[in-house]
Image (tube, rainbow, N blue to C red):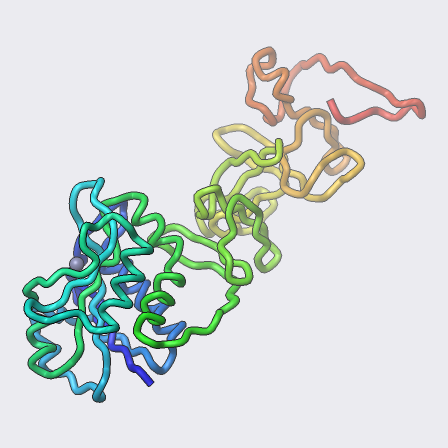
Amino acid sequence: MAKVFVITGHGGVDSGASGFGFTEAERIRALAARMKALGGADVTIGDTSIDYYSTGAISNLNLPAGTQIVELHLDAASSTARGGHVIIKPGLTPDAIDNAIADFISGYFQGRSNKIVNQALSNADRAAAKGYPYRLVECCFITNHADLTKFNNNLDAIARGLLNAMGIKTEEVKKTGWEQVGKKWKYKKNGKYVVNDWVSDKGAWYFIGADGFMMTGWIKTSGKWYYLNPVSGKKHHDGKTYKEGQMVTGWLYDAKRWFYLSTKYDDANGIVLGAMIVGLYVVAGIAYYFCPAARTKELKVAEGQMVTGKVAINCNFNSSGGLIMKQ
Ligand SMILES: [Zn+2]
């Protein structure tokens, strides 16, 4: 059974290259963590707290015979450069594993002129001196937005591709839950990332945007406005403390205005939980008027804002004499 030893490029405090708010060291460690999770006992992650270049730590490794070393990086150049490739020691011809990794990474991240290059690297020399098969993989460019976005959205697929190329079988993990990417959050449902949809978690609702990240603040979806709590731990008017991104219900005071976000589903009136109320609406026995979009200019308030003072309302009564609350 093949064993893999992963060196995460830029160990210790070296953050490596950066792009679009991400650092190479953090992204590579996230990928290595997925390789460990998917590859299990066959995968060892080298100590990420040390810099393998300045310490020469490869020379002190004591790996079982046949262990494959793979060192992972993200490249940096102009914003248009993209693609992945494999680097091996000058004078060596690629072995089957070098070729398999290069086929995978250059196919997954296209754009390089060569899928394998010979280039002098002190870690490659140190590995060769110990008889360890070694290659460095530049997975893609952190400075190219399309490369980085694909990398961030497909950590498991990349981890799997690299492991499979080294002869390690990975099992399909049907995972459900949150994943942190930098300061943002993604949500996976049965192994698939949620995009442009609601997520229900521990009795609370969250919304994942078209870019795959959890949203905060006001959002409009399916024709209705909702408010997603922007900062973790904020207490709203109902006395409840909300998590970051959590959908707020009940009274909301925002930008010096009062709004009301439905606390219940009311199919007969087309009202859903959390949706911003417009028109006449009764809360705790008192009727309020929340400005419909059609009257924002005339009443000089925002859509959904609670109106005060003297306001003319055109009321509608049904055949039983009941006031129709929808405006
Ligand atoms: Zn690097």
